[in-house]
View (tube, chains in turn red, purple):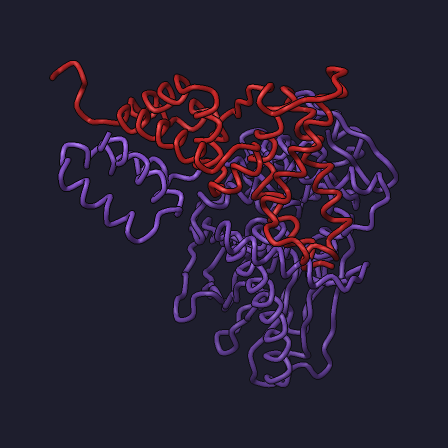
Length: 173
Length: 386
């Protein structure tokens, strides 16, 4: 039990922030999002004896959070059906407030600007891939899109951001 | 077109989705477009930087999560159990045969990050510490002075003054324990201490006086000094008032630290790491503190400036200056024989000053509230700070 608790705790520490950010993108409220993630983790603890049946625990937890978030969204907006496309999902960055971390380098600012300028969907996919370290097929499963779309959207995002990190000032040329 | 291919390949490489051929193809394209290489190197280092997480925030969140589970009546090692494990005694209240859960999570953790390594380290550390305690007792038995062994124990809220068989005077602070033998014959004078004590050691050049604690051994001939070695405290401190002492740190065999009067040796007590839920603030602070430091004793700027803060408890005073609330709470727990729990984890960081003698617990807490914004609730022997 104690060992279980320790593993559970580490898992919570690892996934709580990214999951809350993901849930926030759907329910638009950090408080509700935290509650959702906490609820999913409570279910996880209750069902831990069956957990070896789950092939991909991380994706399983993400999908649980997605489902509960969509359910909450429906309740809040009194809607019967909701598709993820309609929601214009936009995940806030999991990076902390840069001011707090004194990470204000010119490059940092330029990268953040480039990310903000991305189309919503490309930004979402970028964040899931980079900050949430998710695989293409998992992003696709989570967002109900094709792997091909993930591949294309991520390439667009990477191209735009990589061009923003460049050393030389574009005007000089 | 061809350039766009580069971004597809790079994206796949960074997300571990690329095949061997694709990685080679990327290299090929890069050698044809050297002007892009620099951007890509910089972008890759940006990509590989992990998002910064706020450990303290997570500690607090996890605490709340656990209380939610408790409220719903879910069987879970409660936060109180952490206090139990903190003492080092594994009285696990619940038993489950859920090894499978542990197994699956371990696999995930290894895949996702190095978190498991961290977890395993903590377990190892725990074993190491308990191992040390055992070796203490073996050492005592080996030296044969365990004959006629006596133990003096003080509870929280008490302290005790007494003489050892060799004439050495000992003041034992609250919540402490000392063991000693008959000290007859030619053998060393040795004691085992847990907690805090002040020693006025009788001179005997032929027989050094040795104090064993979990983390340090202190060897003296004749001196006055204070040794604070509570297992749950952030630091272990040997403070010398008079004479000289040698301190041996058990983690560093072969090294010896010699103290002069008015100096103290501060050793970081690594226990913090394993009880980080209880101690998020100091766990973070300890990352910046040196493991061993020699400092000067501190003298009060407010009260009696002739007595170092380190020994103020001898004057039956609860004195602290610029100390973190979390450390002050430990002292108050021992002084007033209470348990202090922080509901607001950020308060642990608050720096406090205080000088109490006969004040009641309520009076002391009210006095602290003058300078620091917090509330408290007293439920029997439990104090909740929020």
